[in-house]
Image (cartoon, rainbow, N blue to C red; front, side, top):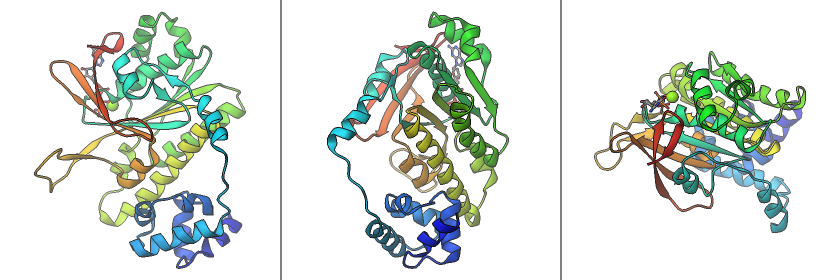
Length: 313
Ligand code: GTP
Ligand code: MG
């Protein structure tokens, strides 16, 4: 840690206090700062926009930013697996399914189906990659083994076998949640468990409950950022799918359009590769809207939550 701190302190306008804030938010090297957006740095340090931009530019200049060829990137892309749900509409919206090597965030109001999708994915990953494991980091006590069994049966899998391949951990607070995310790597490396899916349901509930009021926002965002960096790194290094859920809150000052916004601001939005807004549709349907993706058109998919999990309408 000491050397990293020295590196970061070389950046213009970064003193000991700012370096400390950056480090505890997971910006542990120059690269992580070089690729950050000004909004993220502002969130975690309280710096001005000008100062944040200056730091990012300086980090880029100090780094040899290392290019790889388009072919190398293509090769990496070819190892990406797309986890398929029983809803073709939802899969299509995501360009074939929920991608490994990426974080997919689903945000939406109460009862929109975020947790249900997490359960479906925990089964789907085992159908598609036999012998693989799902990790479920449960912050609100919403994991239901009965539901997994039900969905497994509909997938034509042995329910108890499927359940034995789901590793569940209840996270009691945000620090515990962060620790559990770090432990996924131990499961893979030390226990030789082939984890291909990590569900964090909900990503933001503890953070939201623990950090109340303006004064604590920067600290909250620092921790959330660190947590998301852990998840992103694990997704990348182990080519696994990370699925996180997020709630929405009312925007007090909006008179036109959608009066809600996702929790977590810039930090969660920027760190998620795919973002889906989920809401209730007509009758018992659900509408998923892709709002952010690196390579896919924005669009909508309609599906239904059923006994068997989810299905097309
Ligand atoms: P919050 O966590 O409260 O923000 O909501 P959420 O978005 O996680 O919602 P969740 O995934 O828990 O969806 C709950 C909805 O799924 C319920 O309103 C039910 O309509 C539906 N649902 C859950 N289980 C079943 C089931 O076994 N059969 C059917 N048909 N629907 C179910
Ligand atoms: Mg839920």
